[in-house]
Image (cartoon, rainbow, N blue to C red; front, side, top):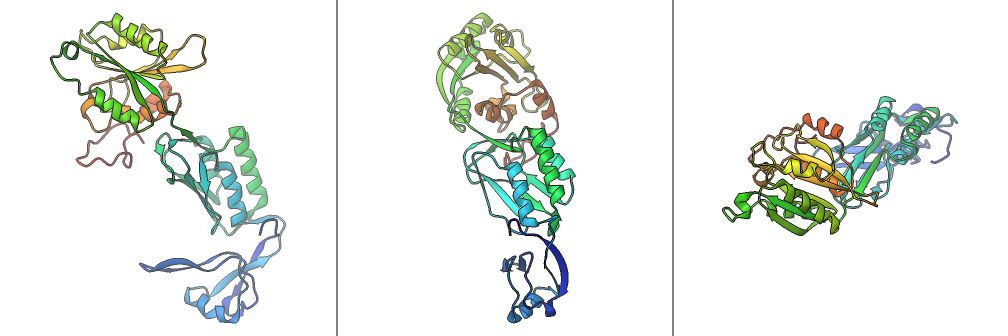
Length: 355
């Protein structure tokens, strides 16, 4: 119906023979079916009338012409154009709805102000899953809908222009593909260095980075010596590490000097401490490599990452692996939803943690 002049009027179903339906007619039988029995644009025949009455349609909307109105499906296409981006698939419009799904494994980013603006216009909506979380190929990420059957053309043009102005013509949604990062790991602690205990932390790191296509390319184990830790971090970066993870030495004990060692690399500390439990002693920094625009994230992980099912690491790692820079403000905002309930059966990320 693209480009067609649209308006509606109501007629009685018993008088509808020859009329053109302006929306799909759906039949719902609980536990049996929810399906379209007549599609938009269908010309009603005499034998259709009993079927329409059986699905509760005593009256029908039919087409009339109006240059100033858009059908719900045409308007849905405008909403979709504001949302869809690379690495996404979409459905066709149906009853004013279009759904978007991921076409790759990546991090979902959402322009929240733009999303809120669309949903403040009235008569239209976009609903999505939470941003800053991983999505897999095939995952549904958002759905759009026009509420009435027809909507003012001027209103849709206004929302389109306002959102494009807010986003500099960029879509509301983005999926950042995960990068196959080379990760250097520095383990600090006399107890591990001298073989007093087994290192059970590094296997956790290896498994978690592998979820996002990363691999540990070098592992350095050191005693509690901040100068050696600083040197090790810089050596890993020089060897091509895309990211450095430091374990051990992150508490406030006098022997724990990893935060000082990270600071002494010259890295920019985003945050030492996070409003997340488990994970309050987390440190995030970015190191600016000489002669390159690339910054290398350096993560100082508290001991809870080793034994807790989910921690601050699970909230920050996907963003780092997608080259999505995390700011001090981002970390401060984690406070709401930053308390993991440590359920007996963990269903993360389908829970409140990090949301």
